[in-house]
Image (tube, rainbow, N blue to C red; front, top):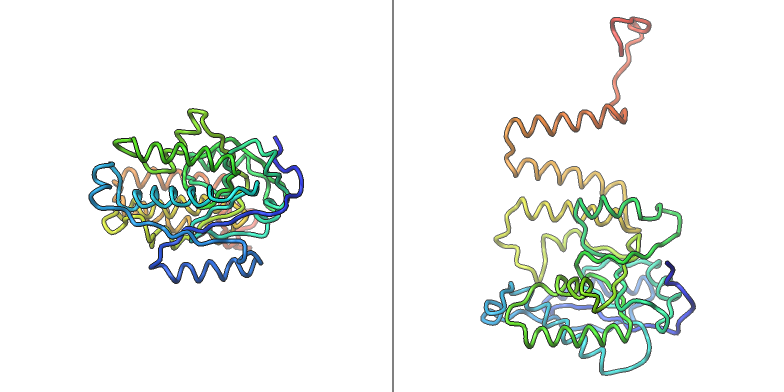
Length: 304
């Protein structure tokens, strides 16, 4: 299934940023300038959630703020009709030249989707499912899948898709007594076939690891350290499905996994089972390296 069709004339870009997060803004603008794209983006002032309202709607304060921010974003997009694609990102997104090459080959009028995600949430189950589908790194190939697992770090909207999403989101925000996080609501719209979302593999963007522990919107002060570390581990898996993958990230992921095991306080039996599974993997793939003693060469009873 191919969605890359012909050269388009341009796109509109937005980045969502809290006014207090000046350093994030500076870093992102520097990143955009390095890619030659800084003139194509408009800042959208991220909204903080309302304490009283978030309780009534069943949301965390940051989640309520994200709903408000996206409504403002979609209202702003609706002010101008240009038939251009709209790229929306959060201020912790890591972009790529491949992203803009991809956008440059899209036709806004012929895309058979409302939203194209260039990155999304990944956990071990998602990673296990998507890894075999992801084109080999360095192949310069991409594939489109009709899967969306959550997160709105970076996505491309068609004008019609933005219009539909605006109608659904504003209606839900106005009339829904209780709300779920907006990315989960968008997943619901996808499952109900009200909108169509595709995701590009490999991901053409990713997120900063630091943003997981230093989120400026999500509430993490009282987050269990095991949960926080699990989110970090999942982010490393996410990066492995992107063009920003690296061997170093794999090493960091393993270190993160060790911390999770430590934080969990596993029983002796659970630790032994983990060690046995790990040992079997190391043996099966001949990973360990031993020093050889020439004096023992040919010794059948002393294998090396």
